[in-house]
Image 1: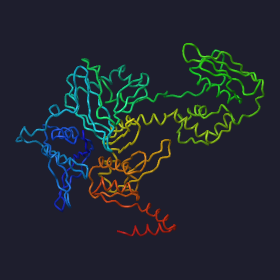
Image 2 (image 1 turned 60 degrees about the vertical axis):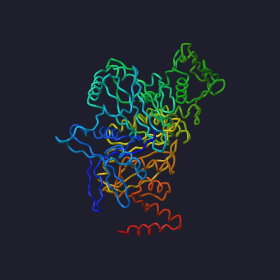
Image 3 (image 1 turned 135 degrees about the vertical axis):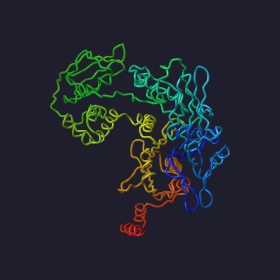
Image 4 (image 1 turned 90 degrees about the vertical axis):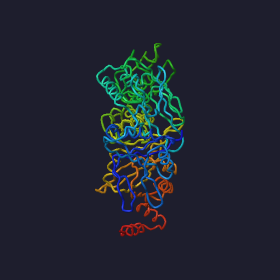
Length: 587
């Protein structure tokens, strides 16, 4: 199905301009994807969900803004032909302007807005097993990766109508569904031993396998839902006569990873004197970690004499020394037990082992991880790790090893980068719930790998539209982390001449496709703004994207970037000051 973008503008008013044209001002905006063959009834149903007005009290009037030579005009939307005319606009994203008027006694019943239960359903249910189907195109730059909806298993519940919104799909409920939904949530709050809440909190304990868009994911570490690549997603939900069997916490919670596959607490290494014959360890790795810490504290080194799946034999690095440890794996599982331990050295221990072989980055990282949990990790640097190891163990480590140890400790404390990417859908969902009006968009490749992420906070959008000058500065900065990439930013300047953030986007590099996608998301979040001005450097992709997505906006060059380019061109430091003075003399 071909899909196009539209912007729904509401809570605004029409204003007459001196040239006779009209504009819709002071509105809130929502961007979304709809079918290119959408009907008038489907558009009205979507508007009813977004605006959330009383159909028995208000009449709705839908209009759009069309660009004509030299001006703009208001075009009314009354039937399917009007909808198709609006969706055929290819120069800008179509804007649907919603106006509400109170009903009067003379209003005809035939003009009533079709209620949700009579509107065309976008989902389908059949049989005793409910199967929800949502079709969406995978073509183009702006395919959205949204939150999958889970059907509520109640016989009286109506089917949800879905329209793709940036980062989240719109749920359309009638009054009966709302009451049932509130009742189900109350049961979740009141039942402390609710089984589904337990399953959600322990999602890592039971590996799950589900079919997501374009790929199949296995394992208990969570999945990334709704990946572009195919045109259909199905979620099977078993029907039950019991309302208790249908309780849920948030829509699509089973598609997210709320756990990171690691313990929430990291215990410090056990005291060094607690190694004894007969002691059990969960694994060979745990045994070697503790013995490594023991060796660093006692100022000696050991080496592996024999190691396989069932046996670990360690001896002192000095030949003919009597120190040794031998452990074997128990038949019941992965546990290792110390069978023999001679904690006496026949070699001198006065020598300081400055290049300790047991002081690996992993071992050091496990030692400093508890400190990161108790203090701000931003205050610890590699040189602090070097100083701590020298003070506590008398060991001098290189800067590179200290850096690797710190990175490993950070992964133990906060999780790995991969886990952070995996939690992006959950983060976007919670952000939209806690900050109303927030727009998020997550783009993934056909194989499920991360491509783009867009975020614009609802408070930032409202503040810019109501209080800021319509001037936006856009730029991209390269990221130096493990995965690299580029962060795109759109900012404004408040009345105190401070930077005001509007939107952020993370992607691969600065190119035509990336900038166009970012600007399209920005256009969907802000809507149409008159007298809009963009400031940027002279990047060709920015110029191409603004001229295509914002053809009515003015694009100017940043004075600072222009001055830096002039210094490189003319090899003079004062040329930038001359240019800046000339630019600021203009009024």
